Image (tube, rainbow, N blue to C red; front, side):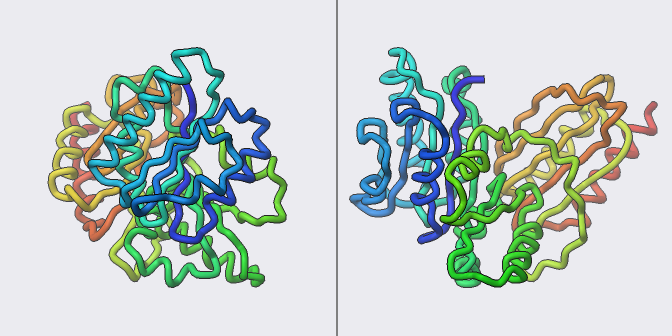
Length: 323
């Protein structure tokens, strides 16, 4: 599959660098087997000085919010990693990308999954979001923090300063409302490094099954929403593409993540749909269509959930009436 890439995101002060240090210690990986790519806000970053990793394997990208220009820098950093380390026989086993506290991880994800030259060498393993439980209400008032949560596959909640277990459970519930694709775990300095490494590395969460997700019909009090669509039967491929084209055109800047497993007509195995903003990927799986139902999760901002659901049900009806 290539070298796994793990993205570590989280708002300012959430504990990303501390987490990375502990994960590296508990991973069993040697210093020359891990590449750390950092994005720091401002002209000169300092977090790289706090990492225990060997300096020559740290690629630092300054410039602030991850946008088009920084996407180019990331591609250059990964290409340099290939040229300097991989192609010359260095035993690289892991890449960790640490975003700045105000960065949007979405362009990073798009760069990794949509650049053909990277596909033979790298794959996106997981997007890990670090949550500061002590300051969560303040942080969630920032669009950047919400976007980081919505793009994550797993959320690690730093319990520093929060002793109340009920508060932690409330935070977990709140996170599930915002992003039903992500599971939540506590992150504490008292945890073993090995346990943290297990939570962060080599879990293939970006492509994990979504069978265990349940729609609890949450009532949202903010502009960010999630929608879970389920249904039995198969879908005509042309009808699916028409629906997806309508969805992408109608909500061009509003849909952040889409993930699902669908039964396409005349196929024995389900198709995985992965969407990051306007980028859609389709992969055939080993999941038999006769066993699994259709399930799709959409996460976005100001989306018309009823309208999207009705349009999907129409293509389901259309597909099954033609049989």
